[in-house]
Length: 114
Image (cartoon, rainbow, N blue to C red; front, side):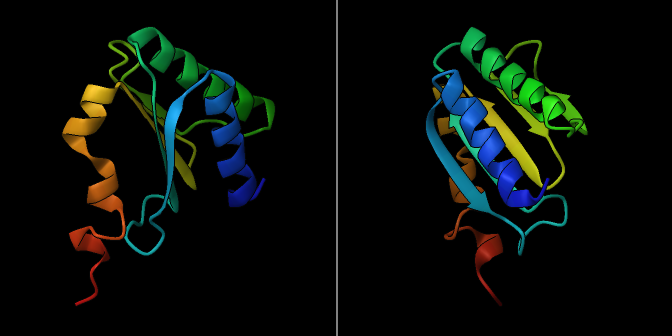
């Protein structure tokens, strides 16, 4: 499965469980860890966990084993590492606080060429 297909699998899995405010960040030039970050919100801890579980289930069904999953216990912010794609599923208050879009987006300090 190539990176584009994996990204679409993650987005589809998020949408299946009614995840909101999905953003896709290409961080290939900024990170050696991953190429794409998919960030989405779930309104409750239960929904955040359900979204993450759906991503994991769909990835495994497609033959992609997650490299790691963090944050499932409290489900305020669950990270699913699929290698080329990392999914961040957060409750809105946590997402507002950490603001990953600003940290990793086009306006981020890491994106500015020196």
